[in-house]
Length: 489
Ligand code: NAI
Image (cartoon, rainbow, N blue to C red; front, side, top):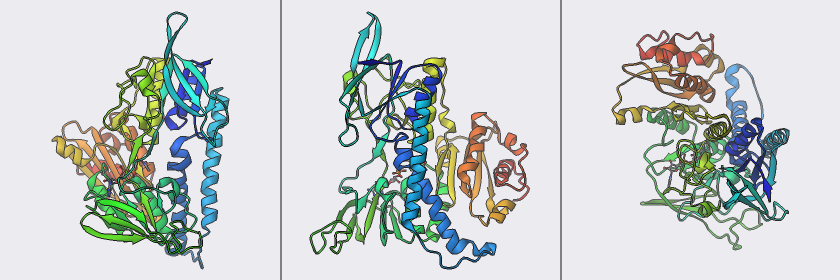
């Protein structure tokens, strides 16, 4: 049995950041991760590889049709998919090695295996020590099981792809976001189930690389949770890019038809049978690949929560209070495993706050200032409350809009689609939300998040000098427009 000050289960952005912060306070930390690479879903099979492919596929499109406007002639553009995938894998392994180096540098002990809470015991007659059992994961870890103890444990076990009844991912023809990051050939026709972040980002990648892409969405809109005016604008732009959308469309099943030789797999020498997607009250769709992207569910069912009587809510999330404390003394939870948006940076902030509260006495996450970004083209980003939320809550607000087409830098970039919308309290002028669709929206939203964090008014943003010519000037103009004084409107 090995003892530490803190044990963290899960080496994703929530867990490894909490581990480093605790180590900075001089604590001995054990980090339990069952994958041979640190960084979690985000780094291994999520945000990072998808951003690498989004960047590369965007360059491909630009080389094909975007450079002529700049007077740059490119002939015979062709795709080397294997090189594109290799580059993505190198980015992932480089960053994972970097995280591992940080863990070593901070003298954190990494246990490679599956961690489970395993009850508590009393040490020295009074100190409560929570136990974590680390067991081997077949094919990944060779070591025997180990038992660790610490007064404090943080559960940061993340989430996994949500299942959909009737759609059984087979790791090949019916895939999840993980396999869709590594398809060895461009599909002829990819059907994406779900028009959320994952569906739109990965749908964009394969559309750009030449696939016909059909997105099937249950709701009458795309990007649930984002500002609906921005989502409507995005839908129009994505349709122009050639992505087909069917909204209000409930997928009831997807299956692979057996090929003539009886095989459902690609590359077996047999002629592959089609995938057939069944939709309620509509004709089925035949395609060659299906991507299931209907959300994620927390990884909380195999963490030993019962051993400490820790509760989960109806969606399987660990119940915590405002300080990330579970019902068991000394056991905390952060990230996708608890309530709130399933975003890497939210997990990271919670990991930091949890460690800081434990060892520094104070830690805080402002849930009103967590940005969300879809890295499509154009990018879509939002922070704070949407106009839909303000309307339904009956909050009196004023709004200012400014379009990128009036911005000099956007014109120089030849990237002028989209707008910024600033929503401010009608009485106090305090910024309540900022929503952007347009070039570099994911970077621009940082200024808006900082403004909300500092409790800024729209006038504060409007009076802040912004360098000219830059894209953030559109944000400033939108802030000026709140008070009807935009200059370039
Ligand atoms: P999501 O919850 O964003 O979207 C899933 C969509 O599937 C919803 O619009 C839902 O209405 C639809 N759907 C559900 N059942 C359906 C059915 N039977 N037929 C048709 N449509 C159906 O989930 P997504 O895109 O899988 O992302 C999962 C999580 O990962 C999200 O919480 C997201 O925040 C996070 N993520 C964040 C990214 C980013 O920050 N850029 C990128 C990728 C994921």
